[in-house]
Amino acid sequence: MPLTNLKCNKCLPERGEHIYIHDPENPVIPACNIATLPGDMTERGCAFAGSRGVIGGPIADSIDMVHAPVGCAWYTWGTRRNLSDLFPWVAPDRLANSAFNRRFCVVTDMKEENVVFGGTKKLKRSCLEAIRLFPEAGGLVIFTTCTTGLIGDDVKAVAKQVEAETGVPCFTSEAPGCSGVSQSKGHHEFNTSFYRQIQALRERRPELKMKDEEKTPYDVCLIGEYNMDWDLKMIRPLFERLGLRIIAVFTGNERIENLIKMPDAVLNIVHCQRSAEYIAEMFKDGYQTPFIRVSLFGVEQTAQALRDVAAHFGLEEKAEEIIADETARIQESLEFYRSKLTGKKVAIYVGGPRVWHWIGPMEELGMEVVMGACTFAHEDDYEKINARHKGGILMIDAPNEFEIEESIMETKPDIFLTGLKEKYLIRKMGVPTVNSHSYEKGPYAGFSGLINFARDIYQGIYAPVWKFQNGIVKPVMDNLPEGEEVSCQ
Image (cartoon, rainbow, N blue to C red; front, side, top):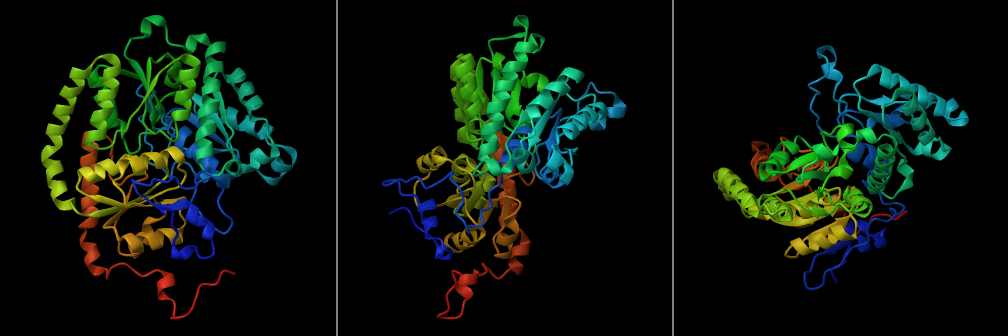
């Protein structure tokens, strides 16, 4: 039976429904996207983290008004490497203020009296003050958290009032942390609410739409790309060389004025298929805009993405020319890293889709993916993992620290691709890590991005520091005296 469990889950046998070893002859989908079991110390993010941290945060010129006690605002500029360019048209004395994500934290700082008597008046004052301080802002997004979601502040009414008084487009995303089983709920909420608010904004302010003479038959949107450590610097030129014009990116390094034009695209190109396919589906239903799913990591997947998009426009020959140029340019470096990494084992722990995004690129480097884990994956993510992996991979849905520790002991990877939190535990176990969440020295997307990724993996595995480590540290359960068991109390 592909479903399995780990020794650390003796007191949580239900966790066996979330863990499996992939068998291509008998594929299974684990229990996923459901509430965390009581007693299971999950590492999931909350819905607010998905809404503000993943989707809304990368917008370059939006003031992100976190309507919450000050602690909730911590998930801002210091936690993700979504980067944005400064605005070239801003006056020099205000240039440093002209790109907001990762530069400013704006919060209403709710106090006890605001919770008791309501915080909408404070929210409106805060929004007006922020717009006064940052007149170059292209828009404002109000994010609710557990506190303001539970007391029921009418943030939509405040947004409407602020926009009427200032003329600045104001949006809301009501995804309190307690509203979903993981941050995936926040992805869904931002996608849904932003689509509807863009639609309404275009109806009441038609001057914000693209004029007919501005449109071209090659206008596309790149959806589900968040410019992690400048990934867009690798991605955008590929499609521009193909002859396309990217009129908007949802949402990395993008401006509000361009996001408002998303319905004017003739094709949507969907990269992250977990956080943003929702809005692509809505554009397909509401504006009859088709979309193509792509993966822009690794040589083969990026090449296939170009071929698929080119076929939509009849640009196949141009795509092949680009692919040939790009692969020739990186071939020497790719062969070097492949010679150093062939046969190495890799474990991957990410939010959702990057396990299946990265199986192919790891195989291109000659590596074997032996373990994978996802924090907020859905059924279709596991279907894609199963379709891409040859079998034998240990997969864990929404793992906790003990499961990560035991899986490392069992699979013994040479490197662990993970996020910010887990790397310290894994390094103490003697296994090098590469930050696969917000990158080490990216970008990692596209043809050249694979070389950057391979470089960081190579440097991690071959770092001289590991010669001072005595190998994988045994987990707590293996260090118990003989005959002693872990208490389930």
